Image 1 (cartoon, rainbow, N blue to C red):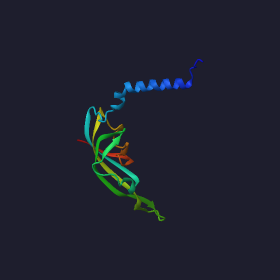
Image 2: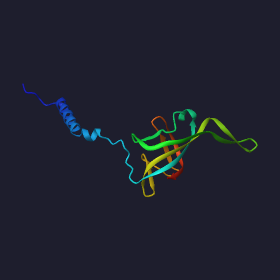
Image 3: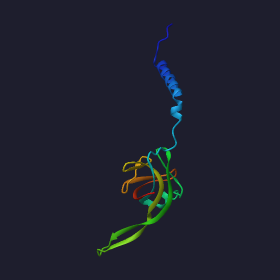
Image 4: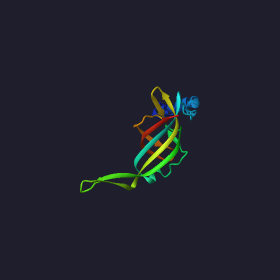
Length: 155
């Protein structure tokens, strides 16, 4: 009796070929660089402000936390954290503006000391362009929230 070639034989052959390719390229697959390459780096201090957050969203954020992006720790560290109640305004029935502090929402201001990649007028930290007014995802290994860059100081 003659054995015929079927789809199970084809699947096993493909799996063996893939295993051989992975074995031969294991150095490239396993050896991922954990260091962030910063060509033309600059040392800067970034001030990021985030509003419409609750206090529970930022309780794990600590001074000294390292930024995390692109599956790597970045060369950026939290230096200062300010948590203030969010100030809102309302127009009363008499037409006058009144401001009050919201009991639930807070405004978080974070200062980050970082080494960024610089190319001409562009600065990059973990895949995010660093420029005043642009949004920035403030992410560490424990906390993540969106914010806006308010100030940059080049050291």
